[in-house]
Length: 339
Image 1 (tube, helix red, strand yellow):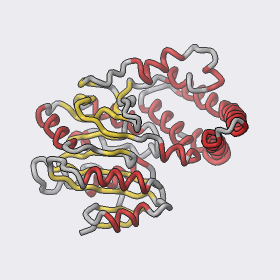
Image 2 (cartoon, one colour):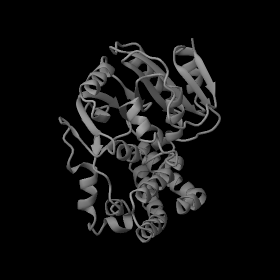
Image 3 (cartoon, helix red, strand yellow):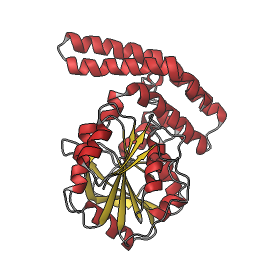
Image 4 (tube, one colour):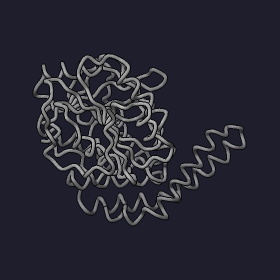
């Protein structure tokens, strides 16, 4: 029977611990305007054998594409939370965790598909390695190729390379590539610093000890934070024996006006918690602010060239980026500076 919750309360540790089998997994999915991808994700979980008892909790952040109604109509066994507004990725995941009854929590993006027996492989690895606090799979793109599934912790210098005013100098390129991909081995099973938040598996106790998802992160940076906090209490492990299909960035690209400023704000939160000084953060905020109109000009020209050469879909994506940057400049800059 469908359990539907309207505007569930904000999660606050410790999590609710109900009586459950020794290997009972709660799959927690935050959703926003990705109905078809969410349907495929749910089908992969519920119509294939996973080898363990599980429940699925979907927290819908006021989608306007009918995603919540689709879940209610087609997946009556899924716990559904309908938020009246987009409360962000971290808060939605905490809402799901508050309702979860499992001994293990699996936080999963809506743009993923999970192969059979994935959950039992996670559980068996966690039970055999009790010192592990957080586990992440190998992520595969739609083309079947491995995606970056873990990273090192970023430095503020690495983020300077993302600023177009500085990128041309090449001064921060080595730091950026160390952060993004230099250490990535898609065949490894090893402790890492940061797992990608598209799919992370934690024992409930490890999640509670980590302080849960920090709700100051609305969209972007929350996986850096949770990996860091989990790493204080145990190993954070990349487990390449498990593969999950991840389409990646579908929602963020379609909603750049929301994603772009929140990613920038998320990095500020992360650096502040990591102990970066006020002076360095002031420089970072100033450069990001000055860079917005530069990026708008670059992407506008890119969109025009792509449109003129018949690449209309790519031109549309470039123009969406321009619109997102404009919304950042017009609406979100005060919040960025207050972060």
